[in-house]
Image 1: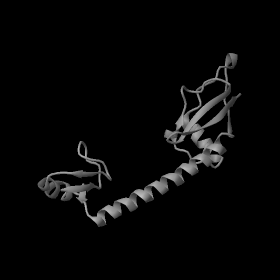
Image 2: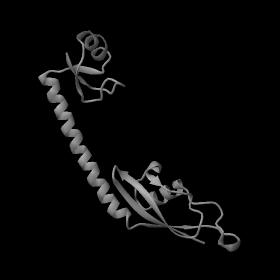
Image 3: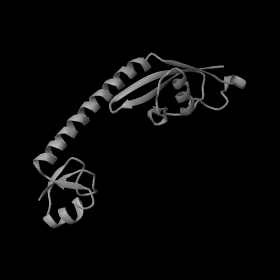
Image 4: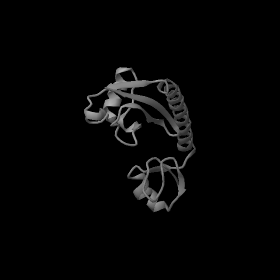
Length: 146
């Protein structure tokens, strides 16, 4: 029997995949537990409709990320910090501080998207990468002053 997976099932199939399995396994496990549906014209058209919708949504999200990238590449954030002897910075600039500063400027970015190779602990300009979408990254400048 051919089935269309509607949920991922480890070592069996991913959502949207069409596989041939034994009738008993399909009826008594996959379909009963909501992992798959029988392959029919109706279910196949639903799958194609869902894939088309998902592709359109993906394209919209990609375009939004590209527009946001263009805006973010022009952004410079300034952080004023306390310094000690020899301009040694007390503490460091964290991902949370960068996220909060971006939010103040009207950019919604998640903490997990902000990538700092090492904590910012010195004065001057630093580049910070923001992963907006797979293969789309923006780079903002962080200026640390005393």
